[in-house]
Length: 102
Image 1 (spheres, helix red, strand yellow):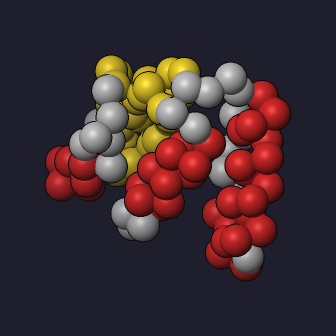
Image 2 (cartoon, helix red, strand yellow):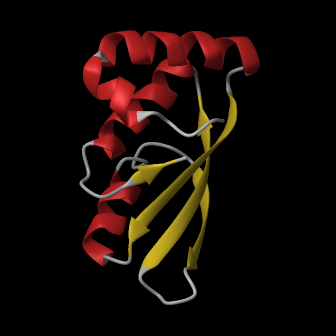
């Protein structure tokens, strides 16, 4: 998936998510595993907030710290039912300050 353009999301979130839903439905065969990728400053509280967005979802995760330890990349492979669920999780994580969604 392309980097989520938060600038376009901020200008018109409804249009952004409608476009994302259309792309997801055109390229995925839900229900299926969906790979989320995030980068965040190495902050346990924020990392925990990301995990909470997946509370009701079966997932596996991989984390990796940057060379200098300042950032953590998080890959979460989650079983999602549909494009709406993918978007809902992006919306929840998008409210966490400092998270880069890939």
